[in-house]
Length: 98
Image (tube, rainbow, N blue to C red; front, side, top):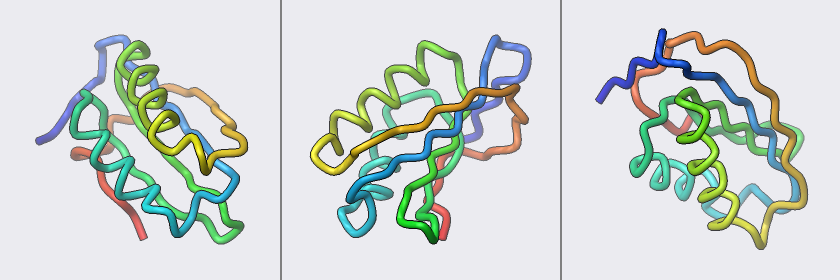
């Protein structure tokens, strides 16, 4: 399902999670959580051991989505760096990238 957020007050957020976030089903869990929210984007492992999450949606929906991911993976996350920008409306749903 394609979520189009252009013109709806949506934003783009990039979250870089660090800690023991690779090899613990972080990406699969994030993908499953995304199905419950009106967000679009991707999650992927980075070469430096962090996990990158990029999502677009309305700010309150993104807040709930990221909070749910952080709760589900709280035992593994040491830090989360969050940045926000204008949405690009480039995503067709939410995916795990490799």
